[in-house]
Length: 89
Length: 227
Image (cartoon, rainbow over all chains, first blue to last red; front, side):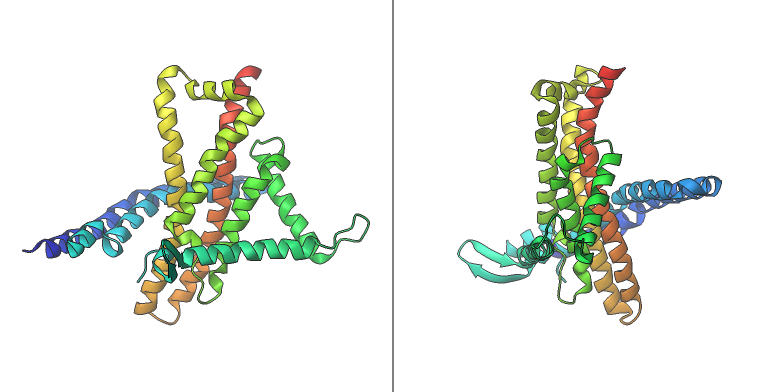
């Protein structure tokens, strides 16, 4: 097999696995965070604005680890450095 | 499909290239500056507040209040950096509603530049407020063994700041364009609406994190003095 097609196979498979596995943990974490926030809003509706503000910041920070995985798979598919190296070389 | 707007090149002159990122950044800057200049040019101390001026004052007061809540005592000091970051990212994310526009924050160059601004602003503000000696001491805070880890943390949070904004905006664009080829009519609109929400939250988070990073280096030493 020539290097281009093996790089293509490796990149595509790895991109799928990266997003597929990398999204599991952030989504579990976000679910726990939202559940806790809903519980506390139900107990203390007065503090809901404060809680939801903190919740959004926290969610975005949890989400960023999933986003990193997504960025890596996007780089593997659309801007693969090894692929470009072999095409030019 | 382009992963960043850096790859859309309009003009090339010698070593300089005019790509979509630079053009859109300057457009957003021009909109912000022009709008502020138009609203504030006829301001008089005793004239009644017009609607537009009231809107601008609301924005500034809101940012001031948020900065104060995060533990920075003199918000007027910090609003020039944090408020500018917030407004720039907000306007560049929200302008995706205009057709033909590519958000400059969807390019890693822009977000890295913004994150480096925050990276440099932390020592600048803290040396100005607590002095060079105390600031350097804050690196050896729990004990001197932690110095290399504190430095690594400083660099890695800059990286994560830039990657978070880039990833969120780029993924929004990417998902919309992938959906456009699969289910062309309805779902891209929904995902674009979701992208507007994400863009607003990301602008808020970038500004909040910048404020938190600036506050964290300063307050840890002053807390230790109090107790």
